[in-house]
Image 1 (spheres, rainbow, N blue to C red):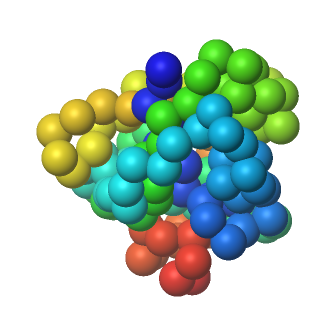
Image 2: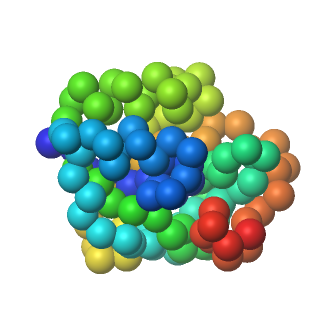
Image 3: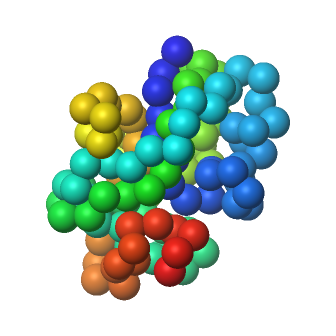
Length: 117
């Protein structure tokens, strides 16, 4: 099983949440933040986590299987738009997250939370 941190449209209640919440092979673990090492930007219809920064990003931790991971990679545009990379969480664990590869001056979401813009 793979631990994945989601922070945008895959979170509960957002447009792609069904990819996890309706999936019998995905298990919600908890709401959690990253360590303050990242930046969250607003790309328009979705947010993007960038690797450099000082923000704690709010999200959810899930456990998924390989088949679910492949499906998520497809809808998240891996490896063209995002890369799946290990990130550090506030509880001193790590998880995979979709990290944006093209931060070209998009507006920063100061709250670090896609739901609080």
